[in-house]
Length: 230
Figure 1 (cartoon, rainbow, N blue to C red):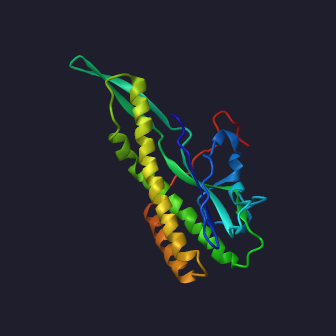
Figure 2: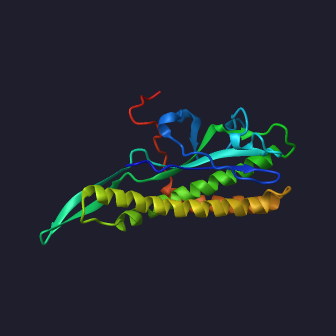
């Protein structure tokens, strides 16, 4: 299966901005640098400097979280032929399809010059992380339905695989568009000035969503294939 990897870097800014970087290539990163969803700590932001997008900006962010939604590297798309009344139809099948939100510690960055409460900044970035994890869990919840609605092909097995990749990518794109809207709305309500009450309401909401979707959380093995255990 061609990996479908999605990236967003979210940050607390005064004023706000959003940086979108390249897709995450699991074959080129140290899997020990990635962490699945958990409580964030100050030392999770170990980047030496702000991402390149911000280096010439007049206003640096307070913090940048590099958050990715990744598909299980072990997921595979294949097609099986079925013959009905002499007509061959290729049925697409997907194995081990699942998603997880992860944070890259070496990419995430903390601005040591700001005077904003560290606890407030950490909670802010935690909520961004949670919004992506909620989206990943919702994708896992809907994965079975997605697979049932995959398009079949009468052309070839490869055509079935290609159309399936396109179908899944379109579904993921819609999910990412919604994530971006949710993150933008969250920042609009909390990033301009100190808004602890509004931020707390968001935290309560996402924590509730995470609890409701707990059965759909996964802990993926993100080591590139063929890479030995450490």
